[in-house]
Length: 193
Image 1: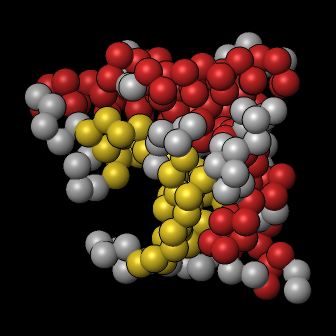
Image 2: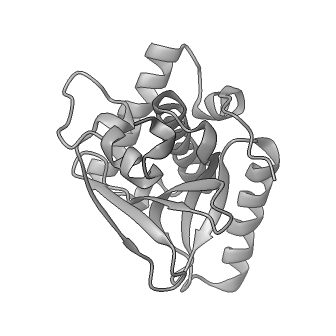
């Protein structure tokens, strides 16, 4: 059976290690608990994943066309209750970031308008290397968003520590000085219509 004949959500579940790899700070290796179900709001099948070492929710779902899978990582920062003028400034900064980078996009997840980072990947081109690069780009994008919006203090110490280790890993393993440089340079196959 080829990777393309396997359900993409099941494939992603396999690529997310269920036991943490002590020697790696790659996000895929952080001991994920996964569940696949149907999103009540959209009716789409979705994989939801959580890790004790990376306390952010990761989601993957196939877009309605069936050709593309969207990976998202939620910051956990809800903007629904924030003053409207501050919310506009936050959304403006996210739009500016979206104009700077190609791979990741900054999005808002309903119902609480939670800040998140997303990447769309072609199902037909999805393989483990593309998934791992994209997952790392999501977390690099999350670091950029947290820093640009000054949200570091809203994170738990565990979350801050985990993102710091990913940042250090980018410096050490990829010789890239900043997460923004990483998400500006990483390349995966483009989504085509």
